[in-house]
Length: 191
Length: 191
DNA sequence: CACGCTTATGCAACTAGTTGCATAAAGCGG
DNA sequence: CCGCTTTATGCAACTAGTTGCATAAGCGTG
Image 1 (tube, chains in turn purple, orange, red, green):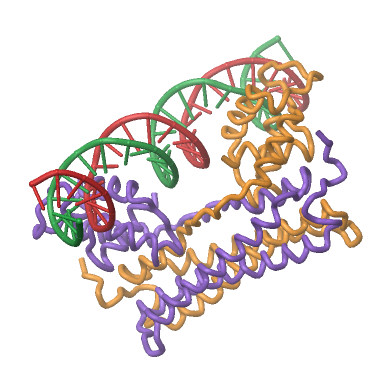
Image 2 (spheres, protein in one colour; image 1 turned 45 degrees about the vertical axis):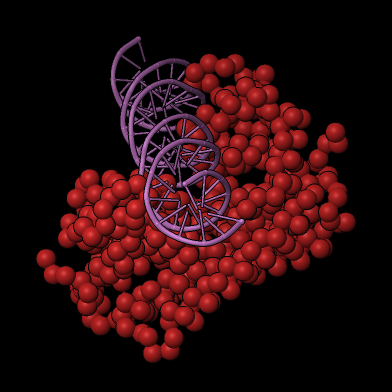
């Protein structure tokens, strides 16, 4: 039950239409929560029906017309309640780690190239986050809200740094495996 | 489409029944993939119907009776194909980061205690992984398969270390916020 | 002014994961 | 040998997220 709260947070930071929210989820919000435009429109409808947000009167609600939303007091209360409530961390799932574990049984063929590709993707993401950091948190911008938002961005930056380094480590291990790239491991049956 | 491949990998490492698989997912497999027993039984049924695994003949298939499965050659081929195929990294979602971002708008009340609790949970998980490392990868156990599995475990260990440290950092930032714990931020409306 | 492109909203169907509960056999204690 | 707990398998219903496509307005251009 986190998407509605992600949307409430985004709308409190700045009232927006569905498409604007989608773009913000693709950019800065994306480093801790992702959502497609379908999810967002559906959830906006629910939140409006529950009386937590409302469409800004200024724009008429016709198809192809922007419809911006703002958060109502009930929405702010709900967000505060949710933020304060204790929650257990969700177990994470990582496909690449799963593939490496599988490779220990069925062989590493084809994996190294994708490790390299992922390393580049993480590095590119890291550069994007650093750009956001330069733009949004210049020295001196350190009020309480800035500190909290910066903390969250730092998590994104540090995580991308982590994965970049871990993938470097993984690739160096690959280099040390017996003729890596086109072999199978001892227990792999030949076709 | 990763759960079936997680199960194939686990069954190749050791043929197991549904409940045994569930326990293995709760323990060591859990650091890169999690699943409930419902998911596992459902998926075992599908994999058997597709001819990728089969029930070991030794045990009769009655309710309350163990039913162990082994991977068929077609299952191994499918796993090798999947492992080698390029896949994009999935955007991650982190509820705690979302709550921190929300706290920048609605106030930090109640959050610090949960940050502390999460820190302890991550530290406990870290100790479990270190225990697995001591048990499963003693010095000298470093064949190609061991190296790959160890690499994956290291990712689990390093990630828990990362979060423990990040939460320490977050808590130290909290300590520096103006009378943290029961205040609201400037733009929060009072009820 | 008809055509194609972009912006913007949305429905429907699907896949994946979660929650709650049911069923049944085996082991054990009195 | 009766009831209790543990082990083991499974169904049904639900929530969350994804994919594919439809609709319609605005805008530019030949």
